[in-house]
Amino acid sequence: MVKKYTEEHEWIEMDADNKIGTIGITEYASKALGDVVYVELPEVGLETAKGETIGAVESVKSASDIMSPVTGKVTDVNEVLSEKPGTINKAPEGDGWFAKIEVTDAAELEGLMDKEAYDAFEK
Image (cartoon, rainbow, N blue to C red):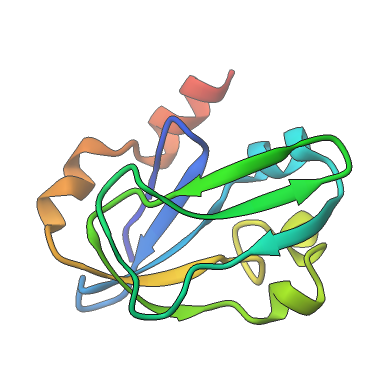
C-alpha cells in the first residue's frame, strides 16, 4: 500500500489495486489542531479536484479545511467522526481517517511526498 503526504498535512493511502485512496490528516496536523470537537465530512458521491476543500476539522484552538490530495469521487466517509471527532486525535493516521476517494488520475500521486520527504518537510 502506497501512502503519500501533502504540504497541507493530509495523507492518502492507496488500496491494493491503486483505485481507492483513504484520506486523513497527519499526526503533526492533529497535534497542531489540539482537541478536535467537530468534523464536517464530505457527501458520498462528491466529485472533487486536487486541492479542493472536501470538509473541515474544528478544534478548541482553530478550524482547518481538509483538502483532497487528488482528483476523484468520494466513495465513503468515516461516520465515526460525527459521533467521536476526538478519534482524529487518538489515531489520525489510522481509525481517524476522513474519507475514501476513487482516484481518477493516479499520476497526481507522483507529486505528493513519501514518508521520508514529509518527515523532513514538517521539521
